[in-house]
Picture 1 (cartoon, rainbow, N blue to C red):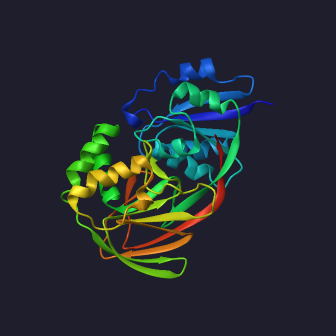
Picture 2: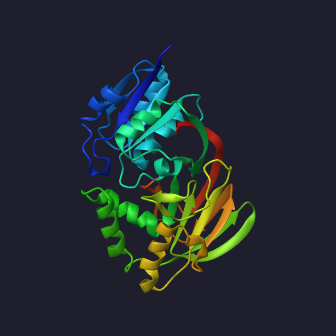
Length: 290
């Protein structure tokens, strides 16, 4: 029996047009295995509504065609069910797809779906909201907020915003409880990593695993501004763990308290949350095609 598969397409993610994507599906998807449909998202959050409706209507596989934000919307509904999640990477960074070994080229990614190879991965929660690749507070959340406000998408826009904001951003004071152990830090940012990277092979926590039942809490301490390019370079060389400015602590039950409300990002999308942040992990709760 063929499986029913829905492709949820974000038309603006990554700044790339996807209106010819259904034609590629018709050419490269194995139609002896799948009956497929396509829908395009029209606004932020629409992917979750489309995914929830598809699950209700009996689709077996839901595929996010977009970046980590689109994946988050679709996976939020798929997580915890028996449905399968697929990814066609079309974002600015494609962090989760890269961590899973899913090809960034759309034709290769479509052909990968034809294999129907299933893995299970951990998922995270941040004050009740789900994330799948990376979440954080501090500088990276501020960049996500500015990026969301920006009309232009893509890596170049993200890099430009980061280098513009870094000279104006100040470290903040945080109290952390990680699996019952207390920490106090002045931090430039705190990233909560399910996978190892933000995207574009920029690895904040090189040894993070998607299926170890743990999250990696990456605390970037205050550093001289002139060190910023070197810290960025370390991410691409996968040796951030060797920097004296970065501390990585693994945990599954995390509480972070901060002095003031500020942006939080979940898979690159910014949210407003309070001063107390409760973070957890749901081990191997998402079935994913890779």
